[in-house]
Length: 122
Image 1 (tube, helix red, strand yellow):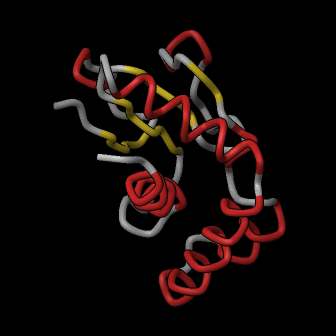
Image 2 (cartoon, one colour):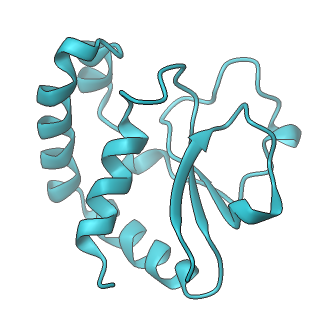
């Protein structure tokens, strides 16, 4: 059974990552494109600039951020296409959502993974 995962883009790529997707709107600081080993940069499903700036990875704002980002995802047509792509890729590989944030617990990739898991049939 293949898995939907998430991890920091700065962590070493491994074969078990499977299909690697950068889900940040901005390219991660200090990461060279040739070292990223990504299969897709899905910046269109990242939080809006306004929401990203407001959240600023502040743990106290996470619950509200999560709610607002999920709303953005439900209204974003690119999210549906991305969900379908992930479901297709999961048939053959793990799918790893890559993000640049330092905080591994309070970031949009965590929310996106939860949202995708709820949207995709098991």
